[in-house]
Length: 137
Image (cartoon, rainbow, N blue to C red; front, side, top):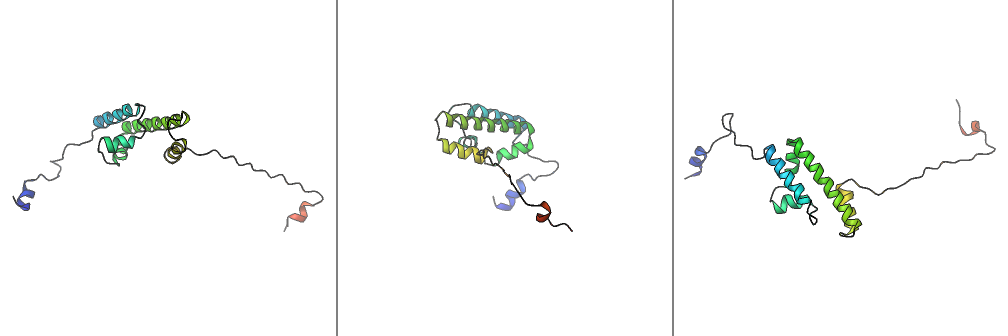
């Protein structure tokens, strides 16, 4: 079969013909719940690993499904929180490298080092008239 005749036999997108949607909300929620169940296993931390390596999905799938289904977005927020808690807990318990855990938490979970800046502006002026310091027009 040549290319032209093959194209004639294919269905074209139209208002009458629409292929079935691959990602329904039900399928997305099932995927999200499976992800959370996978994250609950002690050694599993990074949900991108589950997405890309274990299931061979494309990296943009999380964003696509989160934008499409609010219910899926909420599951991903929960998955991110589980990941954050596991990273911090494992670092404190010395199950993972604390510096690498900190790196991931800072870059992926908006953690930051607490820095305190003391703004001290005690100025003592003796024997100076304020009118000498400020010019009044």
